[in-house]
Image (cartoon, rainbow, N blue to C red; front, top):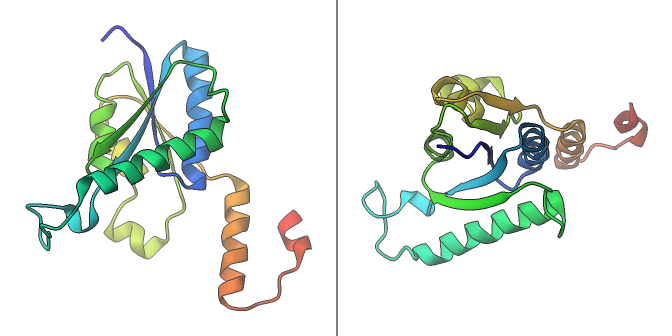
Length: 172
């Protein structure tokens, strides 16, 4: 493949927005195009999977995924775009398989959000970033979450327990 690419995994969450910004910076530095990829699946996996339902309306789920990708790109870059050639793509499948397949060329760079994992879950079901690091044929950049994301998580956790929130804790 003669086109250099930086492939960014997009979920729509704050971690993927941080990864999108970093991917755009990397694309700019490398003189490459930015490919924003969002994986989607119908509930229960769709036809042919366990618990599948014939009543699944795939166009609705695909359209919702396209809207989520569009919203993430507008949120990340605004109406002006990232300043590099951009291709947005939605692909049906698990994020692990979709991202490792999308970044199939050894000259690609795959950028994913590292996210926050809790130890019990990490042992049973490794993160998408960890899977990509182990299986992608190209270099993978796992972007740590934005510090504000951790603070937002702390606020939500305190709200769930109905604990008082001191704004000074968030500033430091």
